[in-house]
Image (cartoon, rainbow, N blue to C red; front, side, top):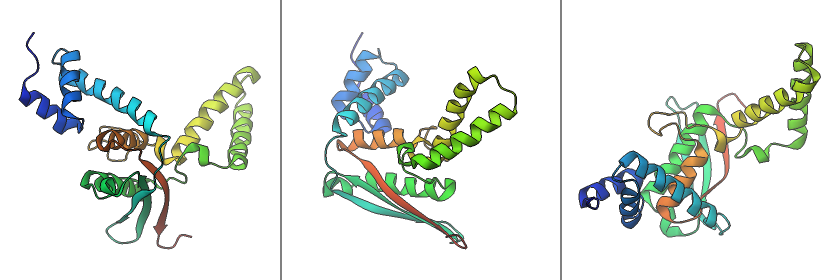
Length: 202
């Protein structure tokens, strides 16, 4: 089979933002199947992002979004390694998309690991009591509670949420979007913190 055409490589690069050589190699590996090539590039991007995750992030931006009407809005700090990437339009667009999501969905923490232990324990007690009241056998209560607790934490943790605009972002979680922008920029990217404001709320 002939190698992928320059047009195919260019189209894949435009779709994924991955380097040209990576796009070419992915198309060769997938036998020209574009969908499979995208999966290969995503896996490669995730692996690269994991390697970068230990690197320092001393640069970045504070992105903002104010809803229309202006009754709620968000400020989010997204960090990267260099000011070059901080000025990158795609990086800035990503940060704004995160701010839009936070404004719409109102997560309480960046990661599920940020949820305080006492808050998690209170929820565990509530879920355990509820399962027992429903007459669930003791041997399955723990499994049920663990599953519900994971779901509860995911609903509060930004990184574990699907971006609310599922069509635009292909049902990706915020964590997957972080991996994608890290792969495109070649830098470690992290969401450091955010503040959401809504008129009448404290």
